[in-house]
Length: 65
Image 1 (tube, rainbow, N blue to C red):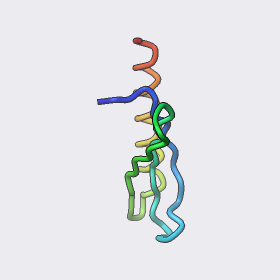
Image 2: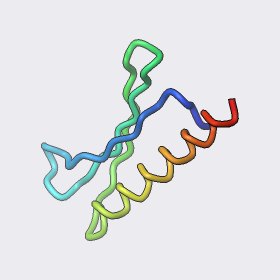
Image 3: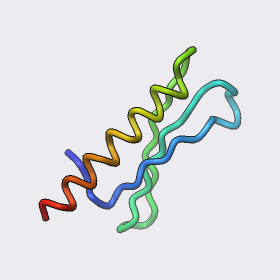
């Protein structure tokens, strides 16, 4: 299920270099953060692709409301 209030961002993990995190921040609650971690040689591209997909789905949901 998609939440139109989540904004997805891609960042490199500061503790595990080479790992990338996609963090979803709930802008309508108490600031809850949901995290998905990507590892491996294509981690940056896969993380960005995932964040882009989730953000575009959020935008489509917002248009439908």
